[in-house]
Image 1 (cartoon, one colour):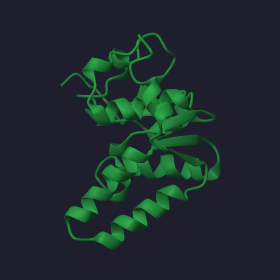
Image 2: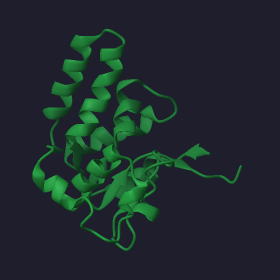
Image 3: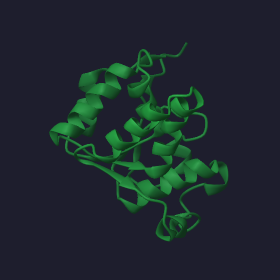
Length: 162
């Protein structure tokens, strides 16, 4: 597999509302090669207003765990504050309205999702996103999760057949 190009990412999400999955944020904060370049470009587009983005509060909690487990409590707080205050990025809180979405849309195979992924998908649905940006291809395959809706997953890689 190889990464998608920055121009493909730009063309695909320009003017869209996207949900960003946790792994994409971790690529940026932890500089995970080769994806951190695309994650950085994505966040530049969000900051410039070329894209509107949604993240789940669950994702912020997941991102904070890395620094916390390594004893970097202050870094965890800083990344939380950075994400909560990032321009053109909305953080969906966990509320009963998110829980009400889980299980309601029969086009979604809720039983195939981990609990955390259900909360993230519900955040996407509540906010009417056009695209989900994720590399979580084992648990979060949108073509099997989101049946007939027009939400597309944008993985940061392309399967080259190897």
